Length: 350
Ligand code: PAZ
Image (cartoon, rainbow, N blue to C red):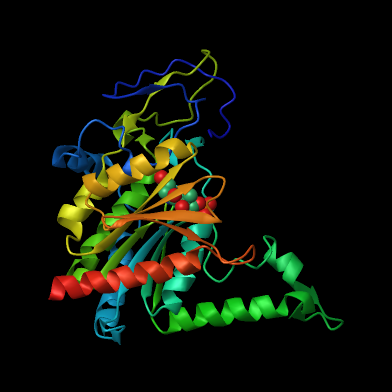
């Protein structure tokens, strides 16, 4: 989806890879795209980070991460030190201009990441929630979109009170969120662009390295496959006067390999694979498992993603269903992953 891009014009980007008309739908699975030619080379990754725009608030993010990891690594949890999971959630944007007016986006609502965060916290994990600004938040799933207008009302003496019909949902949201944050078990880090996402993921992974096998990555974010490198990007709003716009997008380097090999090599890593064609879903999930040496890949189809997912591991494939129409598929999924993480920790420590 390209915002506000009503007409096209020539656009001379010289990139090394695929040429796309921006009007094409673009698949957003950079982390596990097995159609890509080769494994990420460290040169490609280095060049991605070297050329990315400076991350705003990097120092404050590093400080928050350090405090969070220090606090949690001093606590005990399920069968040993408290476990920490980095849950990524929502989709990355791909800016088309440095002073960005238009960008490429994707469908992800962040529901999977927000829901999973709640179940991980319930299971005794601490969570670094790396989420796309404006997407679904933990404990807020049952609240209406226009929260202020629907949940609150003015009393006769001009005070604000929660509308009776929403009071239970609001209480649950506030108490769940408050318990997680005040206990130091939930750290929320927002991103918007592909540049921000990958830079924050790298900082997060490197700060979680010291946790060894107690660390988990649950990579549910829908990450762009293609992007416009910063140095080749138009500075100002692209003009429409000269007709259709053709542009080349470079491929986002495959960061999963680097996460696994360098950033946090002992962590338990789960990536996600989304397809709309079920005939290729499992084959691609299998390839991702092997190529990136993931501990598990969660395969899901767009239309049924809230009902069923398939957990692909070296020991086989298991379909995980939600218990009923009102239940969350994340509940049995997280239960299964916590068990697998326990076995992994035992194996590593044996
Ligand atoms: O965010 P959401 O709840 O709307 O959707 C979740 C999802 C489909 C983005 C996630 O389950 C997933 O598959 N993420 C990876 C997508 C990919 O292959 O890039």
